[in-house]
Length: 296
Image (cartoon, rainbow, N blue to C red; front, side, top):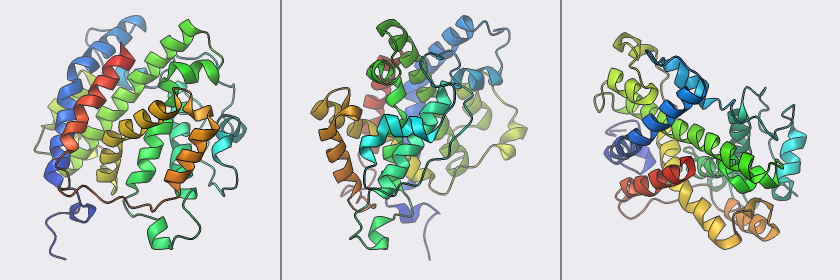
């Protein structure tokens, strides 16, 4: 087709995506180091030397155990988000065996993605109701997946007291931070491996570099990696709008449900700005500030 690269059909130039991914890592490096160091200390991890596996264990968020059901079921999701699904034929998200609080956040994200797909108006042609890149779907996933890092969600849905809710919200915020950095790193390692050398990239992710020889075994980013990155960077705008309109407990507000359903009923494809990618890097600073506030 004469395209410059595999992402050329997406609408946002690859160089803009690369710049945004690098900026996200740069802007959150200090916070990630601090949160990992604090988590290692609190979790009695051996810090001499730190291990890459430590960061993975920390991201699982086993230190936020309060309030979750003993088993993760569709019934729990329906009790939590049932207002959003009335009248929809929602594809049930894959239910995972819990290995930590992060599992519940992942399933909340899967619910958000399913809601965006199922919410499309029946009157829309298939070509308008589905988008090969799924940016809007991933944005909903980010918004719903971030709910467990809200103290209000912790109190209202899990029934935790204020102290426990605040502590667990910070743990889940740490997990979200590590996830966001991993998404940026996966995009760079697959789409722009020369932007940051592999050993430096993994050192920034885990606090210790992986051998460069493992670069070929590093999981490649999915085909919709550009959409995932854009959704990650732009989801805070949607989340902030929901809070501004309907308060911190918007997920339990019937008026917010109608608003979210209205958004979900629109065409799946969202046109990029007049200059695609021009403002993408500007989304990094507010996202980083949100992580700083949530992890503080």
